[in-house]
Length: 247
Image (cartoon, rainbow, N blue to C red; front, side):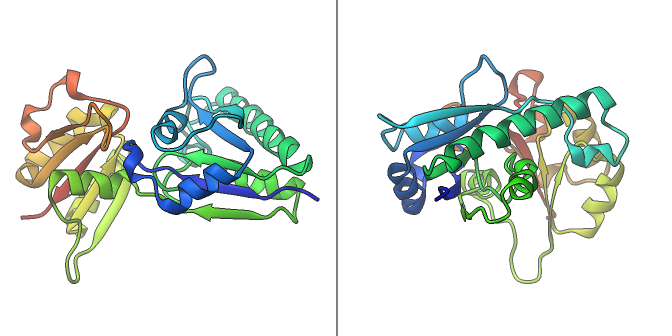
């Protein structure tokens, strides 16, 4: 009988933000499937859970997800044929590695930073897994997202009453001004590569005063800057976001 796959959100970085259910599942399974961005690098998700749960005796299956444009960007003409093929090869290898564990009868947990439903790498595997094993049992364990963790650390709310909240990757600059005009709170994810352009738009629209920059929320080297005009290149990080609240 095939094993069950758990997809576990491990939170934004602070091991104490791992939920009780996530900790229970991680303790119970013999196999951990661990995504990482570089083949030679360490997994941030694995380092988070090691701060709360022992992984001694567990089989660790490392899955390499290259840091290139994803399929969602292909629709915008932002992805080359070469990178598309690279991703497809890596996703297939990752799916095959997971299935090889489940087919052997072992339950496994795929661990992912934050919450599995918000910009998670797992959903690039989801359809591929089910195509090969339609009867596969998958259970999702939600986790605290960097969005809510960043707002908590900054001491601000995301929405009240009838407020409208938008979340989008910051690289969609073409729709940024329209989004800022339509919503009361806007969360811009992964702003590091386009921060100067984002800041310019916020200043021009008179929204800079209500914007907060948060990098590596919940981690030991977390950085919160409530005056975005003071953010410098050394403050920028891949794990970063800007929360914009209209005053």
